[in-house]
Image (cartoon, rainbow, N blue to C red):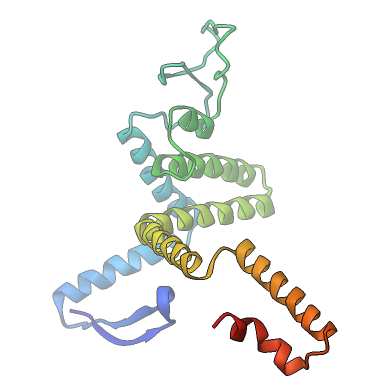
Length: 221
């Protein structure tokens, strides 16, 4: 088994540095898999192929289309179909001639769902490959970077969405408890205004600053 020799980073980005045993058969297989993965990540074509396969599987499993090169229509009932030259489009059907990502959205899947991310990744990969074939390397690199950002966002959401929602509920509860004890921002602002007005009144009546400063608290005891 590989051993953790140290860690780098901290918090969410903390990572273990592993040491493999070259005399251990299992460790050798693990090193081979790591090498293959590293090799795959060194080429846009290889890495994009893996992402494309994963995205297609996600959409196919949900019964959704997965070809970014064609247009679709979505019926009011949520069914989809590929648009072709022989198809008669109902004039009242507005959700027609849609790209893949919009088709998935019209089928009821938010853009930040697994299916939504998959469709958006496929659309970006198609654009990147077109730019690559056209020789527009800068544009292709920018689109490849956008694919990486989107894939990373999808992975983060999958891993930490439940914790984020739970944390939001805790923060909301703490905020409500704070307001219950100390009042809302509007109520606190109103108390401060009343305090300042009373301070100004006492000072105008000749009370010393130190006395006027603490007068509202002492007078309410």
